[in-house]
Length: 383
Image (tube, rainbow, N blue to C red; front, side):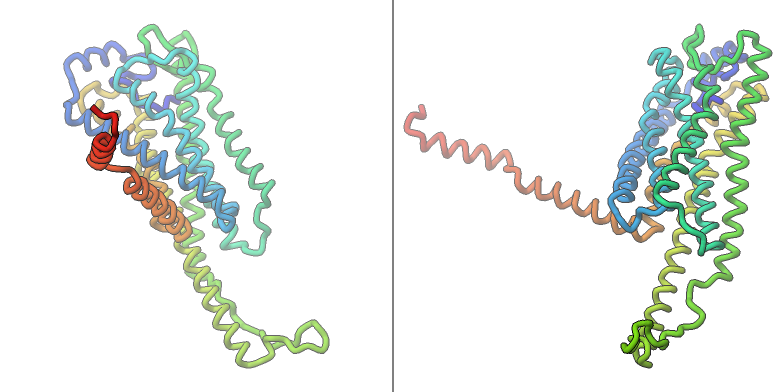
């Protein structure tokens, strides 16, 4: 399945290349629309690179965040960073309408984006499963470090296996388009293309979203009935150490510990609710930004859409919308998670102070000129 925009509204099946060329000859996108799209691509790419790199750094350098859930979020950020790195090639291909980067990159870059897309959806499913387990089965052991690595490896391996047909069929045709060509026979090619497109749409969009929706509905219902607050506090038992009085045997100590435990339970419940809201926001952004282009491409594979300006704009702007989650996800983490928010503020604060200190330490051109002039006047050999 071709996950890039159709260059200059060219059908990926090559069935409407002539129609596309005729449409392009009479239809020209306005300069304002083109500048706006390129500006949004640039901003989205920069925010994605900076934000997701910070997410990865924060997760792996904060010992309190080295948990299965946060490692999955870091894996999501890794996928976003890698997909953002190939964005310039995709945008250039979209604007020029010809693939100019050679056969090797044609066979690698676009299928790699399919890999990153599948990693994203699989990771979102894994996060939903982890939150479901943590809330409804809290006494089950969390995945160990080795199990976490194994799960992450399976996510990436599965994404690579699903994308193998794209790696094997990608080539440059006579018109300079980087396409998936499954057979020299047009009918066989169209059949294989539709089969793979439907399979990938189900595997990478429909089934994951249904699973995520079901799990988050169960989680939301469970949060209304689950309380992390302990029901009873029997803190006045004698200690197991013979001959010594337990700290909890004092009525005053019992009250203090009870209040502390209640406060801790309330804080944990509040953090869990915020974490769920953050993940739900990420899923909603993914659904509203990523899925529309996939639906559009699915329709384009089965239906010959009219090659007019609405189709052109729908293709280009839905492709732009598909990249927005890469830049919005780090903002969601910082806005809805206290640990990420504190870490972001700390990093940005240090960066600002370093830039400010660097600016104040550098001499201004005027002062440099005045110092040089004074030295020249005081020199005995000056002319």
